[in-house]
Length: 352
Image (tube, rainbow, N blue to C red; front, side, top):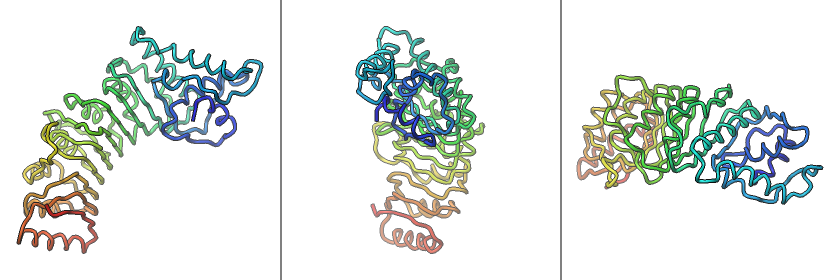
């Protein structure tokens, strides 16, 4: 769906609450609408979800779309070209300073907030492959603080540096957060940044594709992070330090789904062993955990399998267990599992 069609939708669907996650041309549509006679001060109090991409050059190509006929809008193709060029010139030239790029984002966010003050969820794509922002550029995102109902952020970024200030600004009010990153995750400071500035989130999804979520060597167990988090999903592999950080801090976690836990980027084998779990349970006993889904979790001994089952009192679902057991140990494990299945546990495992 093209941004040029948005004025029609917004004007003729007064109860519309969302246009979905991927319609990133909404800013473009708002600009067209506000330039129409009589709509300069347009506001939409019903819309609860808004999608925005910083890549104005891509999303503002000259398409032929809906524009209400008026004395100022008589030639649709000409007007679309004019709006496209107007938007593209703002950030389209490589010679532009980073200040201009930040200024464009700030103006777009201001337009979104002033036009749609009751948003609960914002979907943001910050497409720059270079760092144009750092922790000191919180003013770029300050307009978002006027969204009193904002509780959810779905974020796609090419470089995490470009959203650090964003998370610092709005993180404390978020309850749900999705972060999709298209780069290697540096030293692991990124997950610590999320934990430090998003203390109230109950749901966290991190999408990494074929990359690895790293963690710092320092696990920060002396600080209080992620104490309200109940659902954690990492679509991608997790470095052992990152896993230890997440397990140790998520004291009230109910749902965990992650990829392989690895020791480096070159391996594709899950490195979790009983000794690791024994140490982590000393930090966080995971008494609230109901679902545990770790990709290719290798049960390397009967003692390890029994340890996990015996020490997760509220576990209801588990999957992706690979049993490296033989003979009597395999039979003993199946007998042990049966006792938990009789109490309602659903577990999916395969013999190695």
